[in-house]
Length: 77
Image (tube, rainbow, N blue to C red; front, side, top):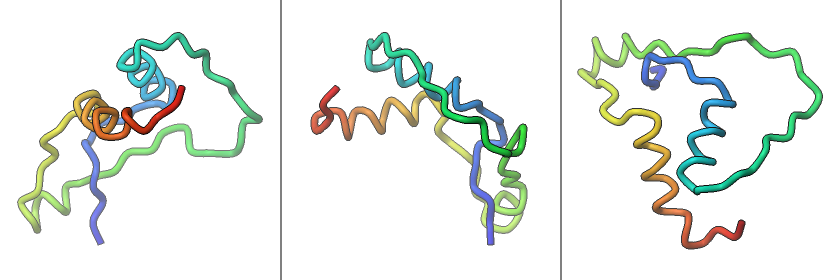
């Protein structure tokens, strides 16, 4: 089993802000009841690097841009 991630920790707010900016939207986040969750999560991909030679090649913002480019035509906002 391998963890696959960038090695960087991103908050939900950061992801939200990137999506908002890329969509040229001015959507305010809605926060629900805070659940008991880890304060930080981070996928350690060192095992994948060592055993598979895999390294992340796309940063978060570029990945979100690619995702939105593929799904945006079918989105209604």
